Picture 1 (cartoon, rainbow, N blue to C red):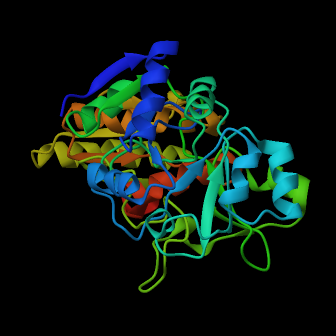
Picture 2: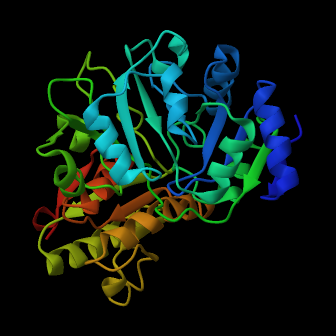
Length: 348
């Protein structure tokens, strides 16, 4: 299959809309990451997403819409959902609600709920309006790999697997949407993102956090949302997170890097801007300023892909406090590292 990579124009969006209506796959930009879309009510088309990504069938998808009226055939909407939509849509918030019968099981991983979102990216909204279909779309990468924040990332993973990629520039947020479930007794964040717990609670009151946000799913525990799988967002190299007191972390990164290189590995560190100079002999990759988790979020997936391009096989990373957007960063870093974490004091 020949994969086209086209800039976002009226002509390319018309082509994308036609392909989606025909049951084909199209990758497109959103404000979070690039999505790989198929007509959500066409089960065969949606199966193509799983085939192209190599995605496990027990990992549900998010359905993207451009107008709330489209929800009528997809899910049961309650007052809490409407308040969240009023506050955060269009934007990086996915809401899980009871599904309607028209939604194929393949979209929901056989759950009785469905995840829905209205993106804010102008290209995504233009495409959704042009096709006027609900579009199921996970991130447009091979399953388990870092999510794509640029069209070239998608092409690297999906060349020969899908018909079309629409290039809309770099994603603004850089991490996938916040996912909140309204299907239980109490609202619960299943995947953190740019819409934080505090922001949600300012609108609807107290919100729970799923226990699996900073740990792997337990045996027999179902993935109720995308992004809950054990090893996810991962580069090819082994990632280890280093936590502890700042000066100890910097020294531990230096020692670990030296040891790994001494054993013949291609090793590097992911560190804050403030520590790049101190770690200049350790192949440092700047992930942003330590007090700006939004900057770290924006850079994270692109940095992980750079490490694959450089064929790094051992990666040591600093961590951010798991608060606000930092919780989303640590959720992604934890899964990229398969929750492999070392305290710096143990190294020194």
